[in-house]
Length: 183
Image (cartoon, helix red, strand yellow):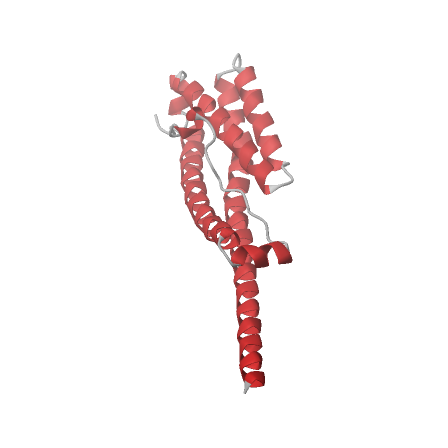
């Protein structure tokens, strides 16, 4: 009888261990999928920025410092090697884009340019996609990080090497302001 009880406890423990491990793997994969979906939207933004900058450059030749900062921030975000680095550099890029949007407000001829209007509409849609992707990413990461920190999952997470992942957070007061993509 005692052998059956021990066997039942071992079987339950093995089932729990397998289930918990699979739960971690499932959440890790969803987190990677969420980051990948966000990365696709960010890539669209990165591809659009040079066109946007070139259009603005034609009208605002003496604003080269602002334009160079945007391109530099774009390149840094594109070349980030880790999720944390990508998040930090993308926040910097968002701030430099704000200065570019503000710059475009000072040039009425630019605001009337059809190519500029189309680029601005595309950028606006991409920014909405990015915002949605960030919300999804943060939701998945929150579930993943919570599972890693809760007992007894935290023990398994440590054993199997699951680590917290960074949330996509706004780090400064400037970044908390809405990006204005309008005339």
